[in-house]
Length: 370
Ligand code: SF4
Image (tube, rainbow, N blue to C red; front, side, top):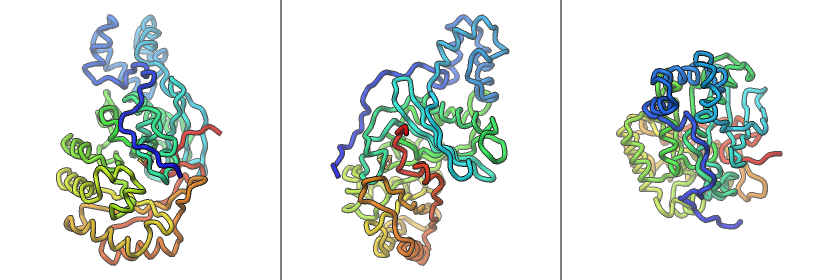
């Protein structure tokens, strides 16, 4: 398989249109004043959006009808156009393919469980991190998503839940995981801006809990340190996939820049400072990273950093992508790997593979229309 180059800087493509979701609270007030409206209209508009989940300005019935058209054009352009939807798990897992204003495609996956709903969200169109086992990585990086394009995925999911289209109890999204397309910390400002809107209480945001938001990274160490200093108790997930540099250099090429020890130190510091347990994501690949010796190595690597309260290992059965030499581990090897970690006292879970039949599990979001 061809070795893809690592890409840090997203190519500049047509800038997405400005949207309410790109603005913070002060900027929203300035924007309505610039349209000749009093400041209090900004709160009214936010209430429509975040409380009523309405983003069609023509439906903002508490605003004068004469201004709704201009408001829609200036601050509520359509960001996501629905292209197609696939469902699995009796309709409770929904993968949606969206087209952006410049024809870029992206995907998000909504999963409803008995007592909660989780949205797997994209932060970039494509990904520049070039992990060879990952469908998204094989397509390369198209561009960064704007803050509004990230936030719009949340609104669309909340609208879908509220409409009753997805079987289960009603209610808002509880969890967001940045595990869709892209490396979120490579699009830091837009991701953090979108997270602040998710956390902001009503009427200015979705009012979610920071503990319900997981940022997943391959290990951009300076950005992990920056995230730690934000003072937000977000959950951090490190896609480790290998316990030693030689193998991780191959599976996660960014490792050549920030090696295993350095990145594990960074996430341990994150856990220390935020008091949030870090997830170590480990995609199980047959005869590549799934031996008992590698489980021992992983336990040694994590144990060096203190007791087990700071970390949890999530083993992910790999969803093989067509034409790839990487495939899922045998069940017996999976079991032996788990047993080895458990014997050493490492908290470990084998993740369920919801969405795998619609290519909606990790490493499968490739944004292709069928
Ligand atoms: S595994 Fe994650 S970081 Fe690596 S190429 Fe895929 S989407 Fe990017």
